[in-house]
Length: 257
Ligand code: 13P
Image (cartoon, rainbow, N blue to C red; front, side, top):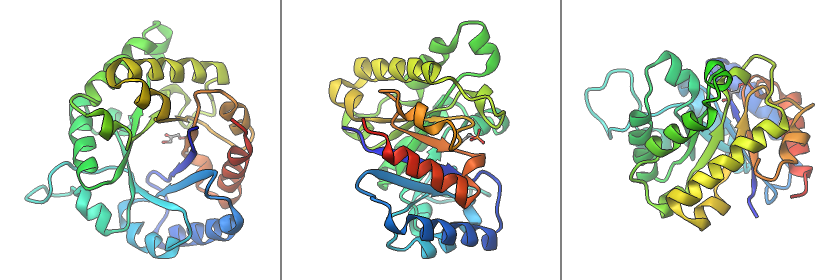
């Protein structure tokens, strides 16, 4: 049994004040949520992390950052280390989001370094993979995913892999309103699970949680979660409002697997 995990990626939205408001609203909504059934994580911008952490204190809602650097400290202007994220109250960190790959030169190699550094300080990496539209249209989806999985996860032990989460986010579905159909999501999730089995063995393959991301909304979460290999969601736009994010979490937690 894999426990459902829903994470909100707030991207570059929300001032500290707005982040506190949203967190306070979620805290109220999730007061009675059964956290034994679902893990909930919010990922604000760096500047809001420690204040959001204070609001989240002992609510059961997890905190994640959206990026990290792999060095412990040093002359790396503009970067933030894994230990610094822990210090700000994080338990999770999103690594290799397609926006970082696309706009900030993130590669499978940098993703690999970041995952290893996060694991060293016991931060749970949420590792993102996904194909873009031209790769899908040229029937290269599986090849792209295989390349991302093999190279991003190089030299990571099965024990460490058990401490990670993977997010499949087809780039063409992010922020476009175009969700992958449940069957399209399932097909790639099952493919990723097969790769994990070949690379890390049966235990990792059957226990590791794979989230779907890309235009997830209250209207489509149930059918996505009904797919056998979809274990949760990484939510962008719909995580920025209390109503939509709490509806997604509630509906996801109600799906029987
Ligand atoms: P949207 O839910 O806004 O499509 O964003 C998905 C995403 O990129 C989450 O990381």
